[in-house]
Image 1: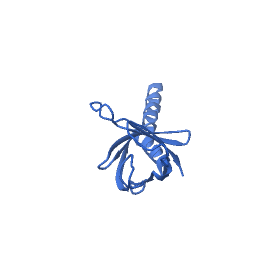
Image 2: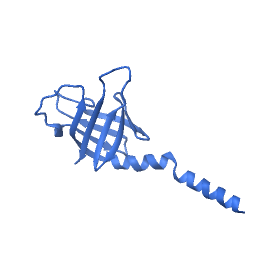
Image 3: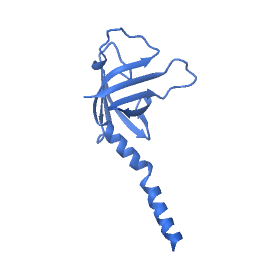
Image 4: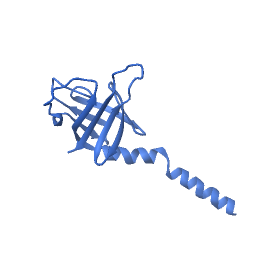
Length: 130
């Protein structure tokens, strides 16, 4: 009898930690508009660049990501609306590629899923929620 109870409790615990539960919780945290606070990359931009002009807006119900930035500078992609999907902590943006994400201290940190064969494609973006 103890074995059956332990087996049932174990199955319940394993089911409660399913990936679907984790994904729905984290994707909800992304919902809304985020403004760029800083960028770390092997790329050139002016010292006085106004990062706050670069925004990303996640709409979980439609799975659309709206990217807004000035015409002359962009980090993720040009201003437009993109389909996206989430698998764990990887956001895949249609026609753009993948970014690992983390929400820490109220900030969204996106790190490009880089190609190890390209030495200088590292990119880390930190956003604050509007």
